[in-house]
Amino acid sequence: MIQKYEPAADAARTVLIVEDQIEMRAIASAYLERQGYRVLATDNGADAVRQARVEQPDLIFMDVSILGMDGIRATAEIKRDPATRAIPVVIVTAHPYGSVGKRAMDAGCDGWLNKPCDPRRLLQEVQRRVGAPN
Image (tube, rainbow, N blue to C red; front, side):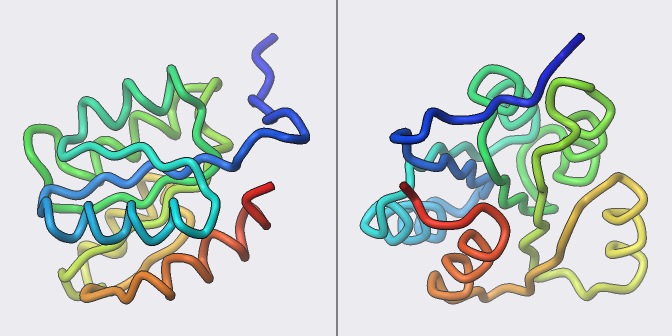
């Protein structure tokens, strides 16, 4: 039986940011780290799937247009795996919702944020979904 990872009471909540634009990834990471969250980051879908399995983050922010495996396929892989399917995945993209949004929801994503996305909006989403950093 596979159980969802639950961090120790004193462990910082972990957020995985999957974003190919280095500046956006750095800004979001630095902002969330200053708020007390542990942040992991990558620029590609295959590594996002690997990090989700190994690190068991509490939340994933996933861009759609990333290197290699796109964010929708990466989300589908994460949601197919019993060890990672409970991790919330929020798509953060500049694509209009339309057909991309339907594909993302069909893949199992749990939310949608439009770019550009102010780091404060990311923080609100983290707090809403996983609570305080601990």
